Image (tube, rainbow, N blue to C red; front, side, top):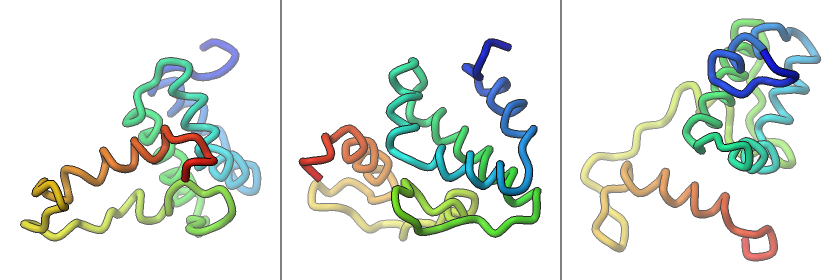
Length: 118
């Protein structure tokens, strides 16, 4: 493995080495727009970056820690990331697109906006 993980299996191996306060610190750092953008700049798709974040959330749970939900800079609620709330079937947005289809697209668009436009 290189100095830092690049592939999903490398990330899984990396994340699995942490426990306790160090794990919590790394998970919070990964749960940020800065981390997501860094991963994307290295060629990782947003869906894969979210998989890395799920790895951190799973490791926190396996370590017996409470998953942090809302704190300054948090991109997502880690508990909800592991146990997503299903969107109601049949509900649509203003473009008549089902919400469970459009929500990920909206999240990606928001993440790509410069901070001053949010």
